[in-house]
Image: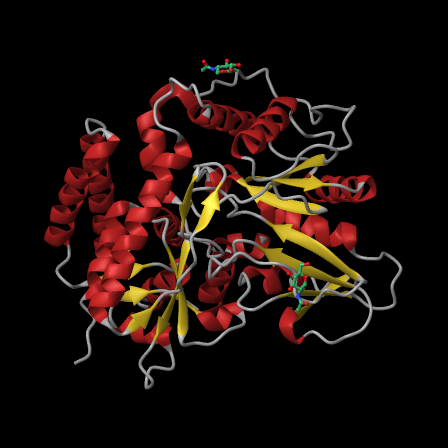
Length: 476
Ligand SMILES: *[C@@H]1O[C@H](CO)[C@@H](O)[C@H](O)[C@H]1NC(C)=O
Ligand SMILES: *[C@@H]1O[C@H](CO)[C@@H](O)[C@H](O)[C@H]1NC(C)=O
């Protein structure tokens, strides 16, 4: 990392920050830095205009708010912009077009970008939290949060009691996971907890690293996170469907799955298997809550539940005391705990969220109801665009009863797993890139390049532009 930062000039930092924050639409034609910055500030202005307009609209008048967004998009979309649904590619394109950039600079920046590209930026959620206003604001005086320790009586000694309380409450309100007789371990995002889990579950004295598998298509960051340090403890072993090796293994079960949104169960099913359940998307805006999950090790994160990806807070519910201790040890070695400021802020956000969804709430609309409707609208738009175009398909899901929302609905995942149906299109990612839509190829998910993953959690403006453009790709 040090080397990476040394080669960073202000220019590069600026670019990375542009890419990470607002450059969901970028000019790639006749590109110069000045133009990038100009388009960036335009986006900011647009976003601000959009926000202040929205504040006066109730949630039910979403049609007028989206028609406002559409007008702005049409004004902006001269067909010259690329919809960036994958930050890495966009930055690569910008950087390659900059004069005086060495290959090493480029590679370093791209390596750094790989840390950031792993998930769709959940900026869709800004809308709800803007409506909530100051209720989630917290003030932390300068004399607070100095100590490393939060609760020395807990195995996870850096876990803030208020955060722990709100996590337990939220799971009770939603009914998506059992928290009784479990240890709660907080992490810097569920990515750190995933690594802590691998560390904790791997036999420490084995002759060879334990195999880590997941059924394809799997979350594209699993292989790179698992193998980034070439650990002697664990090793990525690919698609669980084709895993034949005898002996112990760790299987990652992501349900609903990233990238395709299907509800999943383990597939290897051998006695020596250890399961890690990644339940980042097991929330009612995405999928029916059919029962409280009751697995040995379950991972959750605020980034996909509340949308606060930048807070870097995740949590694990762990049955086994020794595993909880080892996970805590890993986080101690890795970052000596987890930001108290973030935990306090997360506690406040979760509290406001739970308040909004209590049956007798007077706090405005329930977070999950509001965002469920957002996702429903987006999936409807996407399915219409796919139908109009005729070149693509997206998964079909059966409806299921949701115990939280009290009705049946079909899953509406955080990602669309889009397939290019035309026989002659083998590389869907590059086909869409040609149509100025940047996505992430199925290859990265251990699957066919006829598929791409598209984030469904972008801001309205970019999302609307994307479906508009997709619907206009027709057989020529
Ligand atoms: C493995 O176990 C799960 C859950 O117990 C079950 O649903 C699934 O069908 C099993 N898979 C195979 C391939 O046997
Ligand atoms: C809602 O009802 C529960 C119990 O019925 C009560 O504990 C809680 O304080 C109430 N909340 C509000 C916001 O009135």
